[in-house]
Length: 121
Image 1 (cartoon, rainbow, N blue to C red):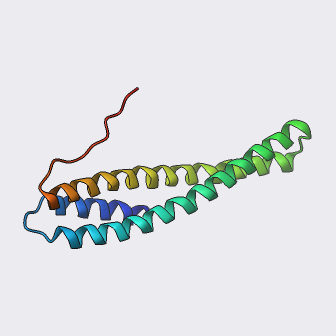
Image 2 (image 1 turned 60 degrees about the vertical axis):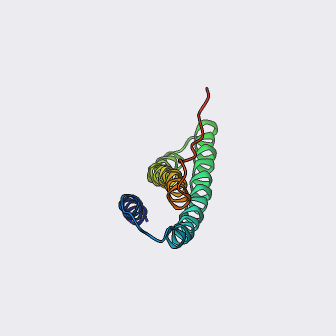
Image 3 (image 1 turned 90 degrees about the vertical axis):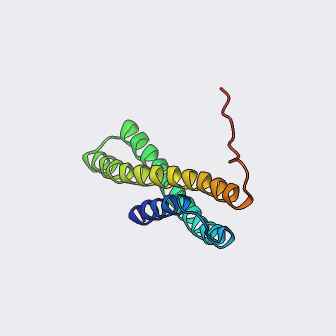
C-alpha cells in the first residue's frame, strides 16, 4: 500500500503540471482514490491503537508479575508496533498531501486561487 499511495501522489503531481485536462474527471477519480486511502488509513489506525493498547497491558503485566514469557511477549508486541506506527504515519501524511492536491485541482478547474488554511499557533 505504501508504494501505491506514493506512486499515485506522484502521478497526481505530474497531472497538476499539465494544461488542458478535464479537471472534473480528474477530480472525480482523485476523490475515489482518496476514499480508498482514507479507508486504509482508518483500518491501520484501529490496528495500531489495538497493538498500542496491547503493549500497555503487557508492560503493565510485566511490572506487576514479571516472567520471561511476559517479557518476550512485550518485546514481540513492541517489535510489531513499530512498523504499524511507521505505516500509519506514511498513510496519514500522504492523505493530507492528497487533500492539498484536491484543493489545487479545484482551483485549476475553477480558475481561482488555491484555498489554504492558515495555521495559527
